[in-house]
Length: 322
Image 1 (tube, helix red, strand yellow):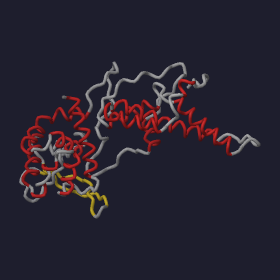
Image 2 (image 1 turned 90 degrees about the horizontal axis):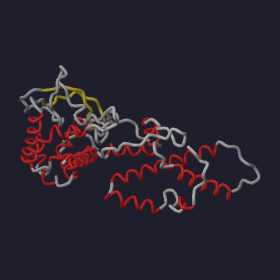
Image 3 (image 1 turned 135 degrees about the vertical axis):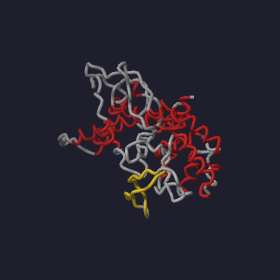
Image 4 (image 1 turned 180 degrees about the horizontal axis):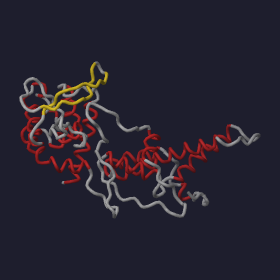
């Protein structure tokens, strides 16, 4: 990363790092241009990282002695903060990695990012594992529902670097018609139903299997109670008992097709007294999720929060495919 040229007055006039005006602009942009808001957020996060890096480098150097005082310390800190702000936003840097991760989590198809300069004027891409460690986000552990990120996406490119269809898009496209039929039967938006299927099955990657490894087609994690007379899949899952997550063996319904799973899910929401108010609350993702949690659909105390997040992702993917 080249630091030979000092910041110009025009660049300095753009404002101090993380100033209040930048945050206000970010709030205003997020509603109209999510991609631009993500890029600005990534830039600010990269700036925070570089600022911490500068602090660590400064702390590791020896004291200059007599000239050290509170005034020089403050001046040095301000200089380091602004210098960190000048170092961010380079093509191929940490900000691009953060932005791509945020875009995947929000269901926004990432744009191709230019390669890092080869003349040394730039930073190599750090691994995403390092990024997760820095941001405090470790890979998700086992939960009542096998989970991937909110969109279920991984960066996929062909030999020419062109983006291929993401996991969330494939899932939505595959089950779109069945979800529309369920919407007609229940009055619940198809995006909400698809979001729940995505959460329960990890976007189709972790759906319940039969003993012989064949799919059960149970995308909604519906248990096989004593009233169920169809096929059964018995698997180990996580249940919250007294607020504590425990591994248990449970029986789940199995179907001949995914269409049958959507139909059975629609019947459950329509006929069960526990979910009698769910359709009336389904005008929003949060309302639908809270209706299911209040009805006891899952034992996870955070189920409504998780479901709301995934439904919003499913709705964004739906709009993108329309």
